[in-house]
Figure 1: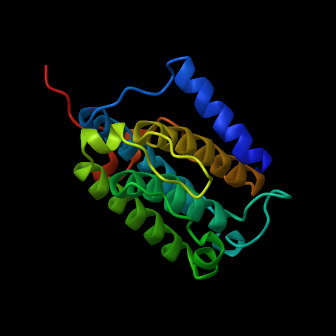
Figure 2: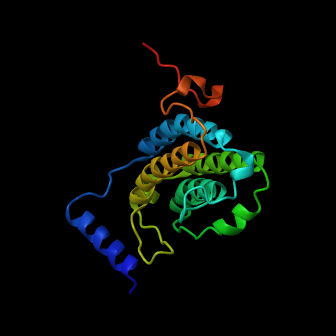
Figure 3: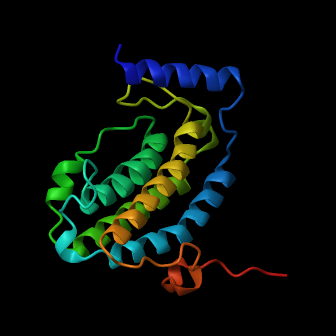
Amino acid sequence: MAFSQVHATRRRTESINLGRIPFMTRKNVEEMMGRLRTRHGIALRVIEALPENKLHERVIPNMRTPAELVVHLYGMSIRELVEGVQRGEIRNVDEVAIAKGIRSKADLLKYARDSFDAAGKAATGITDAQIAGTVKTPWGTNPPGAMMLDAVNDEFYHHRGQLYAYTRALGVAPPEMWDFENNAVEFQPAATTA
């Protein structure tokens, strides 16, 4: 068994033994996607800030290109994890091939939007049984759906942070991290009622 598989199995076992499997319901998934919607609006603005001629360059040595990072963030970390919980199996995404097909910033933004929309659609159909059930993964483990959905948050914030580092490395000022009011209307916080 590979090191990563042993580590993942050990982490899963420790989490179960320590009661750390996230408790989650459909309502929690809905709330999570609502929060991510506003953060997604910020991430789209970070992607918009990337210089178009740098999308396929190694901005930071030994890391993904901006296009590869966005494909990983939106294709695997958001869309595939959410859709995978719904279908009971997470599949590998050919991120390299998808990133190579990105020809412009408009293509990259479309990919991010389409992937987020697909994840949102899948999230509305996830049942409590799917959240509690196991999900087959390409990593040799079968974690609960709740654990995979919880990973969506971790992965989103981690990779969005990398996008901030990329923009700064390219000499571009990214949007403020909590500047939701300047998001497109559909990504602004929902109005609260008193």
